[in-house]
Length: 206
Image (cartoon, rainbow, N blue to C red; front, top):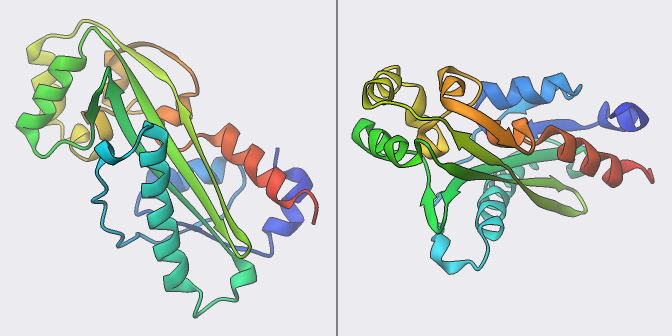
């Protein structure tokens, strides 16, 4: 899908404002050769200050993207820089599930999610020399019935401890999920179809 703008992207220094090899592998699948540059942006925004969940995840992603962009603009021409940042949160009703504080918190989260439908929201920001593009994609994730023994075993694996909602769909956590409605990659933390679409819009006139 990026074929029409591949020649433009080849001239850019593409950065993921992230330390996640998983997100780096995701963008490689659509043909983006991106560097990882973890952001030092302090993720201390209060979700209660925002009317929509999308505003919260987008502005958190914006903080990451702008911090990394400012880090790198001294060493690369700004016209060459393209920084992509993302932030994911999980909600169920009005309750927000971020990354668990510890193993006990992960157990409590998964116990509440078991047998229910939750909604991951992934906000994405593309920062370039002329401004930013921001968007949010959401999906519905339906957990099957899982036992406390299964939850504890999953938490003991360590996989949930750095993930919003205390689960990863692309790992062991995928076995707990009965079905999803929406983009699988939104649940993983980077909606590839929408990212590709927005990049094509951004550069199609050049």
